[in-house]
Image (cartoon, rainbow, N blue to C red; front, top):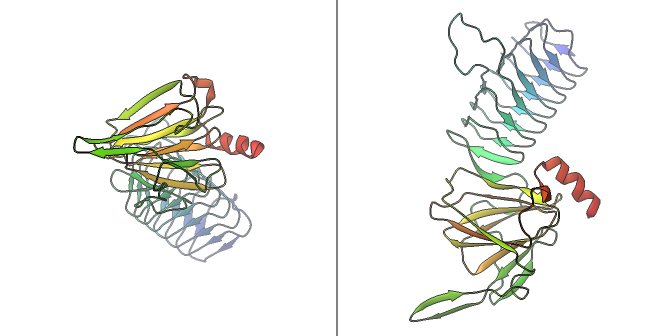
Length: 309
């Protein structure tokens, strides 16, 4: 460890290669990992754990109950809290714990409320106020924080990822076995009609359908994969952003046309978000509902996906 002469380091649990800059104060109980960079004017309380290769920029305070995973970045003047109802001279019996998981980044002046978990590799934008858990790999901004994108997607979150075929048919995407479909459409003076035939336009036998609608714009649906189930998504009204992830490649699709369908096969992680206020998402499924077919933990999904690819 290297320490600036003005720094006060009371902890003996500081990893090798960590640099502590001017006017940093670390209390005795704190545990700091290897190869961290603690910039000027940082205060770290006792019940704090900081992983390896963490960068904390100037003006940050880490209070009791804060855990930062490996490779976390905390921007200047980001604010952590650990008490939902603070009162002068009144101390909570147990601090509320907040966790920032490995690889996540927190932008300058962001505020993190007590008890939240910020998932792996998530990106919290500058001045964002985080009031609820942030899923892995998401990009969140605003007050309160809302998801506006996903880290590592092949395409911009504000534009369609690719166009379906001009005529009815399917085209592959960058994600393993995920296909984009153009459904037949007919139009005359009476209006328009779009249709699909099972096993011809929808590439599996349909056993079930469900509709998703009335979703507040900041809410996220999906966030799971299926072991054996196929799904076919059509946004019949409004617009929805859909993310497909095979564990190696992640791609985003803007579904805003009732003649376009997205086929999500088994062992693909799916997320739907940024629903327009009038969005209606129709989903066809290849089997009846079975809770055991769901994979809801992303790390488990990555492990299982690597076994079958």
